[in-house]
Image 1 (tube, rainbow, N blue to C red):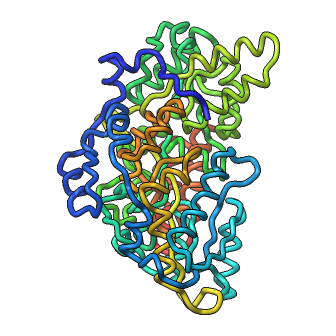
Image 2 (image 1 turned 45 degrees about the vertical axis):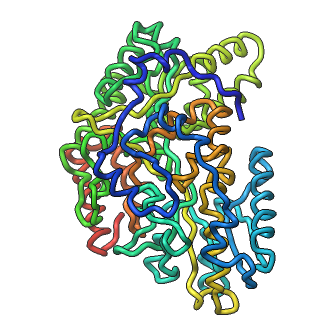
Length: 502
């Protein structure tokens, strides 16, 4: 955690215009109708200022609220797999995790728990193996699209917020899309996260750009990147294009969506995941912008073809890279790198940290702003695949109600993400987080613009293989932009048709 230190200029009227955006009032009204808790979370006002204004405004009695769903004296048993805190995680993550299990025991003293914390890289494979052996847990928490694979194969029970006492209006529309397969909900969001554009204000000033105003559009970002490279001889934007790496779509898809493109129609208001958009005009424009930066302007790192965001961190802390896309944790990471620097490098690194700024993602030509909607969801497994062949649905609902509550969706994601339940933004704990974690309000403000990857079992292949390969084909000039998008479209269409991808 870092001390909250509001960056220069954000309080000024001009800066507020940079950060403020709205969601359609009609959507917000429909989302908030029928909520179990009277939250009054107005998504049409969502902005850093609004997020801060509602934090700490409401209190909840989680044990009592969940007791109305499953009586607190209920006797039963629940088994649960998730990725909890491990050795490298902050101490507060360990404390909050332990506090949850203590609170659950107090709220439900007669429910026995069998809990396993499994590392992120091991969880999916271990869960797959357990399902095949009918030895899975009753409840599992997976990365945001992990559940789609298992829902499609018939392993999960339908599960929606209403089943545990909440309303679908208590959760982000983008998050609910990520647990909906063929029109049925198979999970509840536990946490949501989005990234932001990060820049070095001193580099902007040295290049003759307004240090407190990031590029408003992706077209502007291309211009900014070129200006910085031409004037200072350093990379303007940290383009990421590594093959078979999730970092690549997390940074390229926001640009592609903003231009009106998509892999499928995932950016549409009601996606059907049957239409291929990767070769439409918006997708071509986004890919062309990347080519312009890499091939024409040479304003991004030459190593972009093999870079993830990790490879951008060194140049950024050294003052050799002006703009990147990353999480709030990037500020803490830069602080950590600066603390390890020595001599002249230490002075330069400290200056970079002091000049870090966060802003909303740039928009497309038509003002559309987008970001990848990340996070995790909690799921209930069907009895046929659970060890012992029986799911204690009441015990399961008690656990899920508490885990996805306003209180615990904040506390359990303290150092890493945002609450899945919208009520979490109104709690005193959210207020405390905003005061402690620099720039959290900016990435939080991107949530209404979040778009989940296509909610189909083949999404990892499309996003981690086909999209990066398309980028590589164009950036290396192996193919023209038109050829690269058509090649990608053919592969995506093959997946949709069921005849395989690559």
